[in-house]
Each structure stands twice: as C-alpha cells, then as structure tokens.
Length: 96
Image (cartoon, rainbow, N blue to C red):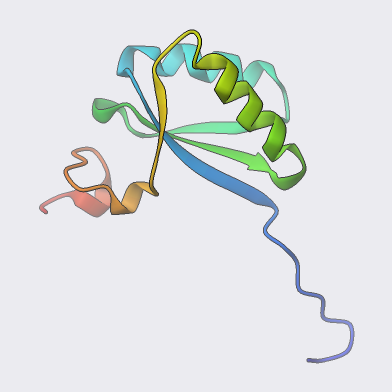
C-alpha cells in the first residue's frame, strides 16, 4: 500500500424501513428535526419503503430514535431495498 494512503470506514450507515405510507411525511419531519442526526429518503412511496442514513458516530442515536417511534407507528426494518421482491416503486424491480 502506498505511503500516506489510509483506509477509512464507511462514513454513513444506511438502513431500510417499511412504514404505513401515510406516515412517511411525519417520519421525515421527526427525523429531520434532529438536525444532523440522519437523513431520510423515500425509496418506494407506494410500498412505504424509506431509507435512513446516519453518520457512523450518530448511528446508535438514530437507532434509539427509531425504536422510540415504534411506540407511535408501525415501523419495521427490512433488507436492502434492491433485494426486496415485489417492490413496485423501486427502479431495480421494474419489469420484474
């Protein structure tokens, strides 16, 4: 390995969740109110699939927030979105 080259750990951790699609906006508002904690992206609105990306140093806090939100809504972690069979809105699954 050349001198001065450092391998870095990933800077963010991304996890995928399924929620009731009418809860996506509420979830986005809650996550974004904790500025810098995490970002949320809608992967497939029809299916209620969102991704949550958090910096590695805030990953535990993001998980704690999701766990707390389980008391208010149904939110379940799912495998990486590209591997979900039957997902209607994701580009990786169109025409499948």
